[in-house]
Length: 399
Image 1 (cartoon, rainbow, N blue to C red):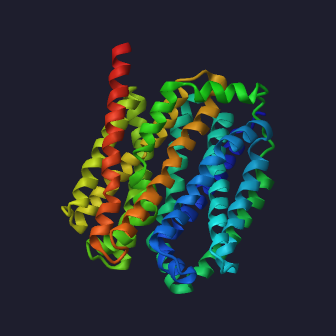
Image 2 (cartoon, rainbow, N blue to C red):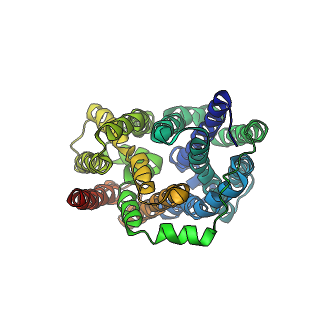
Image 3 (cartoon, rainbow, N blue to C red):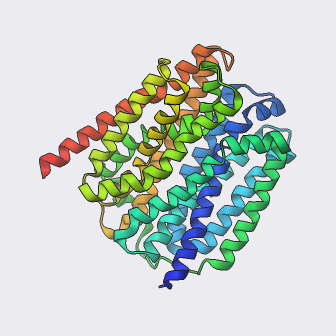
């Protein structure tokens, strides 16, 4: 179904707002950690699993939602998934049993996966292929504004109103967004009627796609491990910063990514060297986090360093697009879903591993515990850098 240019922009904006909304829900545990620990009487290891289970739901739903978007279109799928995220917020408000918030967090992850996949779908259906990375980078920029306001401002809202009132507000906003999506987004469908199993097999058996996605997954630690949850408490314990500053600094990663999304896309498009840009991003992030772990950064240098890390975190856009170039056009959309699924699934591993290490080495009151926990991030960044350097060398040999 073709749509007019104004409708295309409105639909794209709605998808981008959903992307921003789910980002706020993703970083909420970072701000509300102490409240949740006290309400449900849990330790950091269990909390790490709570934060990480988001990524299990997020990743597991990628293939089903990708297929449903092809068959039923973004209108129905995105509306249903927005409501799923709202339902996932309710256990924190109405339950005293820890099992239900865990289930709710998984539901939030499941519903949130439709935000980026729906954006992929809408851009491919309403804009030209040449504008894909550019429009996607703009969507990510808008979305990350939600993550920024999931830092300091969200912490201030919790202090002023109480964390349960904040959750109620976002549940209400999500309900309104679902209604708006159903009323405004046209009933577009992908029109692809090929075999689902053959398409999935074609993508999953492509070694270049899988290798690229795994190496990209090793690089998500700064965003999904540090900025999402552990950054604020790490800075308070290791660097002795107060709550306001410790909540603000990790949000600089999201600020940097706002600029990095269009900037890296522009550089990669102009140079045609997507793998080289990703490799450079991995090196910059690894160096910054090694400096952070060894206590070499001041508060001022953290602002610059985290902003630079944020710029480099936009590598994910390039990695997803690069993966889609390794397959035929008829499975390019499915490949973006598979790529994002694999990359984001590493979020659970980071949250769980950091939580377990912090608990093993003494808990949230011990500085060494945080150093060992967050120290996982620069190590995996180094692995990702080596992986992309290898892919880059292989590409140059073929050329």
